[in-house]
Image 1 (cartoon, helix red, strand yellow):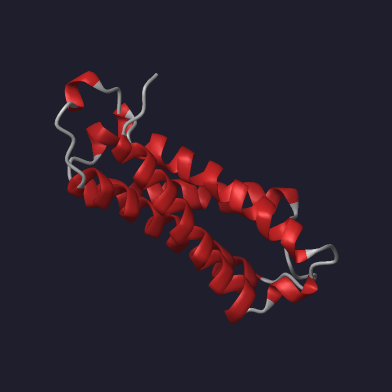
Image 2 (image 1 turned 30 degrees about the vertical axis):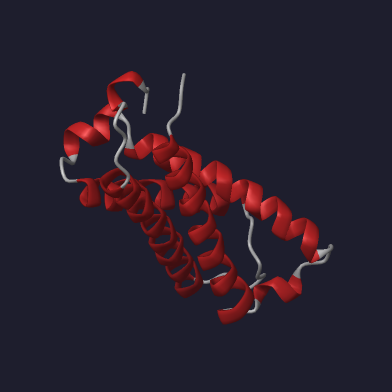
Amino acid sequence: MLYSFRFFLSWILSAIVMYGAFYIWHGVFLNDLNSITFPKVIFLGLAALVYLAISFVLYRTYDSKLFNKLFFFPMFRGIASGFFIGFLLFSFVTVLGISFTKNINITYILADCAWQIVEQIIGGLIIALGKIMIFEQNHDMIND
């Protein structure tokens, strides 16, 4: 399976923007990163790898036959794939009990869910912009 320049650029930019949003939300706005009990460099490095994986799955979801069939317009497809992956990721993390806080209430859960979805929608929109704006002359020869 070959990947194109458009894939790599959209994938990496999406991961970087989502990682930045994660850092702003948890590191600046909520200041959650101060509660980490092991070195922040390790945590942030692992988080970067996780965001690369999330962005890859988001791109593949965006480009799936199902999402192509359901959402013709690229920006809507970016929003829908981001919403889907964001909610799925939130559900997975919640079931595993991964959280920065011990006092979890319904307000925290709803805010965390909303933020996770917004974060992945941003990533989906970056992917959509990449698909729209990056022209590839040999698109028929590349499995994108």
